[in-house]
Amino acid sequence: MKKITRRLYTKSVMLGMAFLVGMALVVGLFVTANSRAAATPYFQAGDDKFETTNNGETYHNFSASKIPANFFGPGSQEYSGLVPLVGVPLPGEGDVDTVIHRNQDVDVPGSTTITMSALSLKSINPITVTYTGGATESWNVQVGLSDFKASTGTMSIESGGTFDSSLKVWPKFTFTRIPDGATKVLDTGGSGLTANAAQSTSASNEVEPGPEPVATIAPCPVVIGDFESRFNSGTTLAATSSSSCAPVTLTSNNSPWVICTGGGFCIPRPITEAELLAAHNASPPGTKKKVIAAKPIAIQ
Image 1 (tube, rainbow, N blue to C red):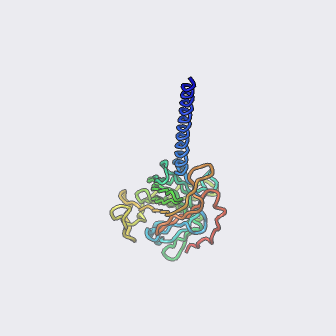
Image 2 (image 1 turned 60 degrees about the horizontal axis):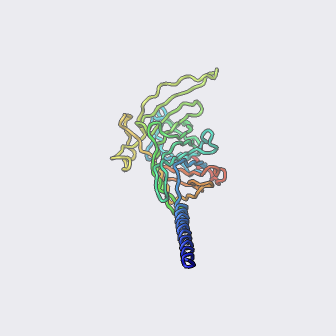
Image 3 (image 1 turned 90 degrees about the vertical axis):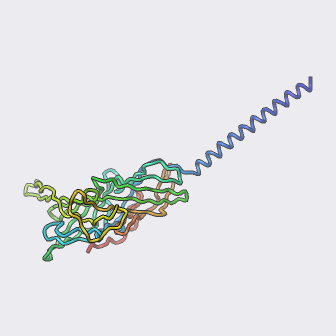
């Protein structure tokens, strides 16, 4: 009897120990799985917001896509200047003037398509337009996004704490003459047409309607193949439905990212996206006022 009792007792103890060992293995696997998951960041699709400083590092250069003669009015000379830009805050967004949306969730390392969903910039100083005979005019410049084409690209997020991005931006330029408010609009995502609307204010402060938009020569070079190709500088197209402007292709390489407070994808310091003829120096939200601004570039 003692032998049987001893055997049953021993068997129960062994079964209990086996159960505990099994549970320990399950818990160990669970902890290991969680540790691996924690070591692999996962970022949901979302917005990255930026503030554009006024230190002259953000600009658009019209030298390769010159604004042709007579664009601003009869007798206006060709314009090919570099225009330094600064951010204009979006409504309800503090100092934020640029928003880029990550369209897909990302397991790092991984990639997602991106879309610039908001852009609001203006020239730091007015540009000077010269006319035949020497007369000059001052025009302010505002930059937004095309009404016709989406500005899209890709972002690759690396596990080492850096990301690369490439973004094709189709800007819309609105030129406003000082002091009468006459405007010219160039939407590079459209057909390359421009529109003008002269505005004047009477003594009663009522704004008189301007003339209907008129087509002019598109200030864009002839495209060879597609927009990835090089194109002939200095050549312009007649303003027809087949004409188009090339996008500004902004790229950023080895820019840093961190995990935000509370999780998520964050860019911790200003980044500069640049191509040959345009650049965008942008800061994360809340940092614009802390960035030491260089003296704005004077427009010649």
